[in-house]
Image (cartoon, rainbow, N blue to C red; front, side, top):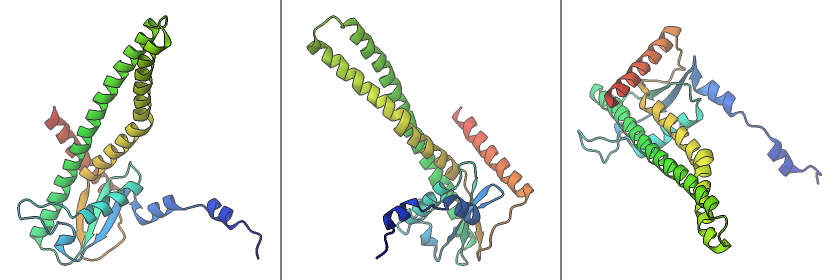
Length: 219
């Protein structure tokens, strides 16, 4: 029997995720996600009614999980591959994708705002608890324990936000922003994308215009 440590061999194996992502999705700084469908309901939920459509959850999961792998600086182009869609269905798909991901972005922004308020409250509370600990340093240990617990709890919450929750929120915010700016194209068969410099400049200009419009709407 071999004396090799097979577990150690498995643990030392290196992956090639970045190379594959660049090979399969990235071209001229643009991430193109191909999505082959066989029916309109693969994108739009079969439970939707006309005028109140929503995206198929499986489609959303596929798009999000693939987009997460691509670099944050790359705009996303979704290439829906199908020969079964009518012009009206294509228009509806494009509109609902943009609307649903813009809605998701709003939900992420709301969640982020709630955590920022929580962070501010905890930061102020930490300062107050620290000041109270300093004022009560001459008291017996028992009364000071309450202020110490309060100080520890708020400090722990702040550290969690800075190093864990805050990082996750910023990651979700970036992904939501990219998906809300997604460009949808349709094709009858798959072809590896080729983007010229003018194509890239046009896409960036369109995204920049849309972002500026949303900023003006909020102000």
